[in-house]
Image (cartoon, rainbow, N blue to C red; front, side, top):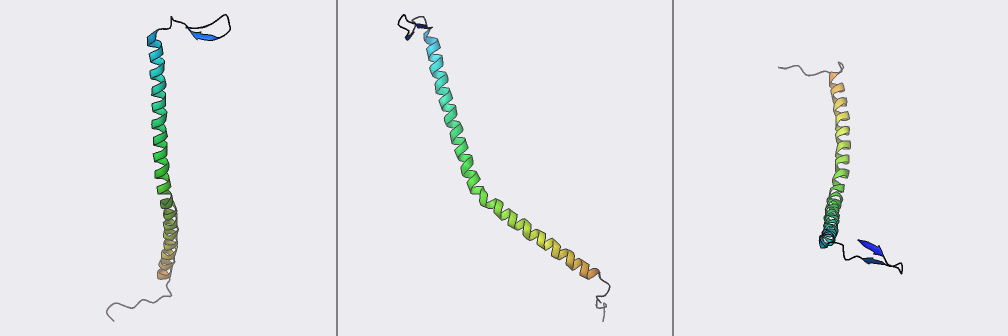
Length: 92
């Protein structure tokens, strides 16, 4: 493998198999490819999230409006149940 010279410098020994060097190169290329794919996926998700952000605000406004409608409906039901309100008789 790698050995230290008498000078203290590192060098590659001739006993290192070519298959090991090719394997390391292929693993490095695969790691770069995987990182690139991951980066592209994160970028795509960020774009989708940015596009969906206004929908969240819109949903909050709709929920608030629905809550107001429910309160108004409850008030109307309460008024209709009060006995003091006279309803016209049928057939008159």
